Image (cartoon, rainbow, N blue to C red; front, side, top):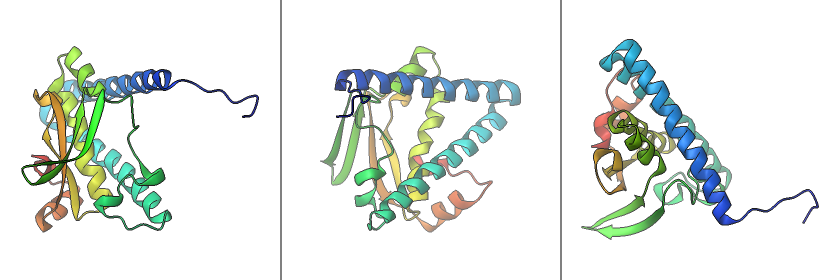
Length: 188
């Protein structure tokens, strides 16, 4: 180990990631609240969702590039493979479960989402929930033939977030790629 290299414990790393996650939640909330207050509910929400879509596209495109650079195909099984992960393994949630089989669907669960906790502290679950559309957006940017949808979401009042990957329809792909069409129904 280099004499300038420092090591920290897993617990300290978790605390640092949680702190950063809280900041991300507050940043989203501050921008979202400002847009809604200044432009009204409808126009504010429209711009928030455009920004979230752009944000998701940037994430999904980077994950796609990383997967392809590893010589892998950009298919759901390879999302997050190797160096292509887009969410920290710890610190953003209390715990996660992947690859569960529930009613014939392969799902993942995230318990104790730090972002959702922050939005709840501020009584802004609905405005915070708009951030969650980053999940279908990043997946469709990774591979438009698939999307990641929330079956449950803590900001909606559920006790945990539950996700599944599913194929997209041609209409969903068209609506998502359009600059002005509502695409959020993809996540319902």
